[in-house]
Amino acid sequence: MTRARFNIAFAAIALASLGSLAAFAQQQDFSAVQVHIQKAQGNVYMLVGAGGNVTVQIGSDGVLMVDTQFAPMSGKLLAAVRTVSQGPLRYIINTHSHPDHVGGNENLKKAGSTVAGGNVTLDIADAALGAQIIAHINAYKHMSARVNGQFATPAAAWPTSTFLGDDKKLYFNGEGVHIIHQPNAHTDGDSLIFFRKSDVIAAGDLFVTEGYPFIDLNAGGNVQGIVAGLNRIVDLCIPVYGQEGGTMVIPGHGRLSDIGDVINFREMVTIVRDRVQDMVKKNMTLDQVKAAKPTKDYDTVYNTQGAFVMADAFVEAVYRSLKK
Image: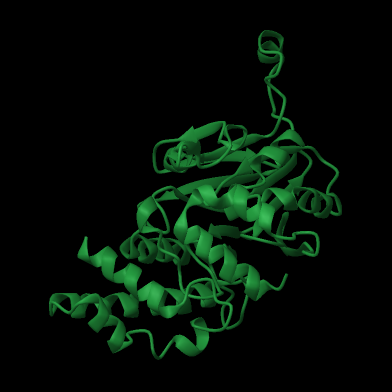
């Protein structure tokens, strides 16, 4: 299965329903998909396979994983992790609730174990079984919602630890891990994960390098939140003066990036938003806005064959965001 075919197929099911995960996984042949692992910097690696990019942090405490792709990819992801660490999988952090980022939660959770004190394990026999899954409460709500009479995500894949406020902080493998909630952006349950010592940010689908951003209006997404999230990533990044490098950013989909890539993406989203906003103020209809092609000078970069979200879908999502 080629990357282009995979992206087109998943875009269709993502826009239709999060409950399509099981049906989609059954219909696709994941056997030919290879997992590629690339060191970002410090203790952090990026894994690319089928679905969203996976971030892995390794060290003496074990393994921390950000996102888990689709369930059939779990064995390949774990095998890739084992090429850089034999440590136990302790934490899984979900950047949001979409199936290409949480589909492997159940399988990979079973492959890990939670850090638990002796007094706890004496009282609760299974306290240490399985890795701990962390996500914002809104991501949990989307995963546990009922879609056509069934849970959007199997209960065994739901987060086991959630947070309500702006952030959650861990100290793992000798560095601070800062989980930052970005409200109403790609969804209303997005998290950025900042590995402070390694100087790497896992951005989830707030930032991608393949296609235009996917604004999931049904899950609380909004273009204003996308811009705010990109601004936050830029604020966290520190570049190397006069050259590429510095803080590295792992996108939800696409290549390993730095601040320059994020700034280019942010400027595109901001300019398109402002153009559409001006058209909304002029009471133009959605069809008129699409016909005006507010993305036309960016289409050669982002409206390419196999892109996750094409220009018209992006423009419509921006328009509907602003009309709200």
